[in-house]
Amino acid sequence: MYVGTQLSGGMLEEFGDAHLRQLAQLGLYHVCIDPIGAPRDWTRDLLARHIERVDAGGLKLDMVQLPLASLNIDTQNIDKVSSPAIVLGQGDERDRQIEGICRLIEDLAALGVHSAKYNFSYLGVPRTQSERGRGGALVPTFRADQITNADDLTSAGRVTADQFWERITYFLERVIPVAEANKVRLACHPNDPMTPPNYRGIEDSVISHVEGLKRFVSIAESPYHGLNFCQGTIGESLENPREEIADVIRWFGTRGKIFNVHFRNIKGKRFSFTEVFPDDGDMDMAHSLRVYKESGVDCMIMPDHVPEIDGQAPFETAFAFCYGYIIALFQANGWDPYGR
Image (cartoon, rainbow, N blue to C red; front, side, top):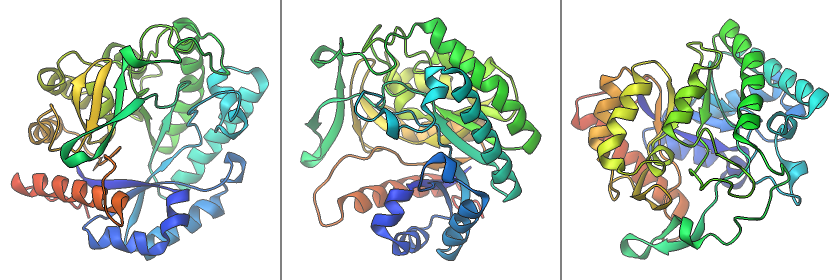
């Protein structure tokens, strides 16, 4: 268990190699990256170049984001979504896209990268109007009673819970055996957040809540099939996040189903919350970290979804605070946060 972070290819293009060096200077070593380009462009050579670039910055590529991040599906950007036929259940094209994912898993293993994460979502990350948090920071917010687009269907149309499960199962039954054969752990991010029934035509966002995630990890059971355990998203699905989160961590952690942790806090509960800094929310993050450790979790612990703050480098500053907070929690317990 060690501190880490995630980078998109777009971030690398915006911030450059200096950002990689900055991460190393802040004490990070392990990173996840989302390569630039369409899925068909993700060749072994491209992945090798990313590994070399990360290594040159003093870091290690620990995980890759698979091109299965079907976020914000709508009629305007459906062509920009990664591997849409998989989540839409579209026949032969679905099979071709799954084959591409399988080849990518094989390439990752050949290059020594043994973890990958992905999303299986129709709704993206719905939020209502942001609110003001500590010191006036702008905090992402979801209030179900403020939703204005509940009846606006996505390009997926109406999706029943049974259809959602069929598409998940179809994918997992074909991909998990390849992951197991290549010893690559696949970590699925829960749908963020749990939404009311039939929101935008989705009967139930089935992998946004604990009971659905328990069913999810039981499909195509394998030690290489688990979760990108987003503590923020899980907390968003609970009625009492502070009291309930430890038991949820233990359930998945002791079963070896946590492959990456988004160490994120919230204020609020199911259908009504804000996303805040890890020290400023309802969940006891120091206690949570101890529960991860006690449950045998072995993966990156990383920030996600920081508030928007003031200053000349608000994004980098906010994440730097989170890195320092996580490292301090490790050291307060006498644990090595670096995982080298």
